[in-house]
Length: 252
Image (cartoon, rainbow, N blue to C red; front, top):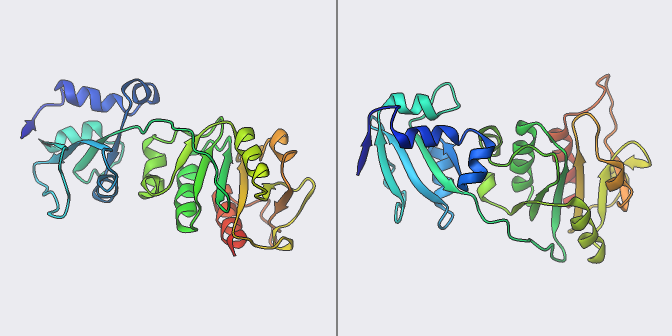
């Protein structure tokens, strides 16, 4: 069992670099923090490589640490590698799963995100998609990096519960159309109030950029565009809130 006492340790320097997207992509790994996230990650086979725990913390007895390296560290190490103000004293280094091509299957419920840039929004929508029983989340070009700490924290572990893929939205929209899965965009333009369509067991829903909405090239491919009526004086809804309303309504 290893013990690290200095922030100048080479492993600590490497872990700190994982706060940057470039380093995550080059190393094929990402870092997570907190007991809940680490516990959820351990439920996925061959995902966790290393667990770092503060010497004043205890590993829960129910954690299965087979094939996982365990390293104890002084609290200062956590201050160095953490992106939270009050670290919980446990972190893990995880492998980035290979980008396998996920084909959409018949009768699935799919959430597609088009250039959603805020990490908190992306993470919240993944978490809500998990709660709503969606089958897959697809991140199109321009979306916040899936493995940034803020996205991961905002998912509250849902990042480990359902397939999340990054790819060309047009390709996935075409797959849905071939399977006769209804594709709904979100837009006032050529849109109707969401409650005018019938919920169904299968659908694809596209949510767009916080300022610009869904790109026109994607809206042109939908079966119907929807909007959520505003009853008060607010100009719009947060995209994460809108996604939750629509996913729960459309699934019935």
